[in-house]
Length: 256
Image (cartoon, rainbow, N blue to C red; front, side, top):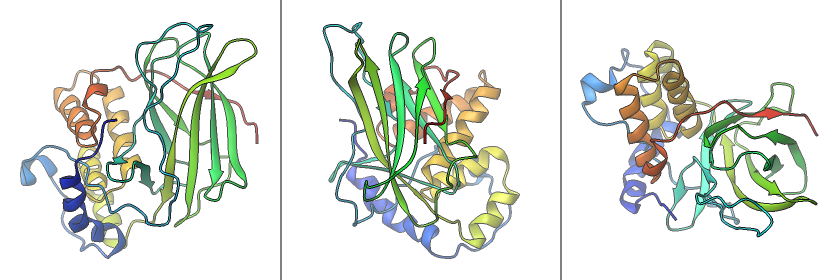
């Protein structure tokens, strides 16, 4: 399993206060000129109240299904000492990211559950892309909004065969947080590219990866954005995913 190096977790404790304590408002941050260092995600300390860690990299084969040599991977931090798979978001309806090497005739399902697993917040069948690549799945706006401070467990499952059986899956956690006033002021003043750096520095994973992926899709030939993408993924131990294309996906049906 690819892992976040423990030294990054140690460094992250110094940055964690940026999320949970006020941040002083400053002039617009020019990340690349002022800091002059690669885009790196600073993971906050992992929550201590999550018992089930998660699975960032799927596995499994069935003789009745077409062979796929690569693994389903969730693009989310993985804490090496506990195998905890979790990312923070500020969004009511966040966008989650996966590397999916499977395509038709495979099918998929996304499920979001409450932290205790007793209730399904949202679930849907997912139409996979026509070619392998990095895909996004955004929670629809007409589904229940994530509550600030609460943790939710998600599952992304790949099915094949008749009758359909689970071939592989990944699962992990998402927690919504509220950015402090100082950070919010910085975000409002920042350029789109520097906004990504602010999210990454403050440990807010899903907004960092989502905003960067959007810029990459609008400017696929931009070498600086490609470097940012590679550095961001490398900082969470997923450098191998950086060359993979970002493909259109995923169509969902509401099955609440």
